[in-house]
Length: 327
Image 1 (cartoon, rainbow, N blue to C red):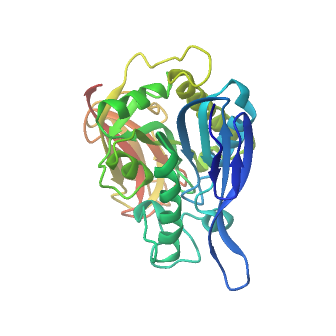
Image 2: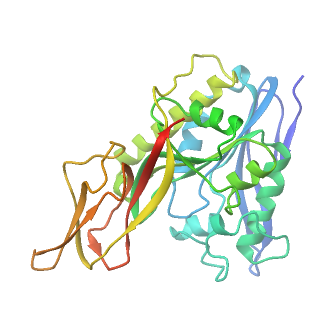
């Protein structure tokens, strides 16, 4: 018989879906700082798949994915459990900005995780989240996107160990780019890796796909990946699908060498292989004269482009994956 799972105010018996909150602190006006939690507790014992969303407040793709997955899964047919934190950073999400507006000194939660019990507010939120996650999670994904500044295509960051790469492959046929991640980075993925459990940071979506139809399409792609993971680990019935090839390498951020207007090359596409010095984009001045070209720094592919054409020297323009081979 499976066990009752209790996380925050959510208490889920086997075969149920329960929503609740993880309460962190109380503000002076009496309002709680908390994060939502949904538990899908299967009817049979098995692993716990933990999904994090909204560590950045301008990245709502995790909320949508969790909402779709909750409708997709029947707990009576689930082996193990799914724990979803749709919005880790609720103050940031409510403000629709990257970091917590209530917190000046630890603004980006994905740079200070796992926080401190007695730290700044964002550190305290991160610490409480970490305590619950490491207690229950057997594997974890954190859902990210380009947020308010860019669009990112399907890409993952992961450690190189076998268990983590199994999880990366289980994301399915659309996820062919898996980049090296430094496990000392300040993220939920890093904490899970440090305790020997597989975890991924997955990227998809952002500002260029926030129109209702485009946003829903991003959510459906992430839902498909989550369902494929459940099939791979035999948590639900069905045949998983895998990419025919998976590329490995590392990320390089390309910055604007000039100020002006950023014009991507219409002939190049996300996640298509490029050669060193291939043309990615052009920057023009306000009179339309070309100032410079942005070129591929090495053989690889780009998986992220800025959303706003307006660009200032030193601004982020492109996330480029330098490909070193196949997994």
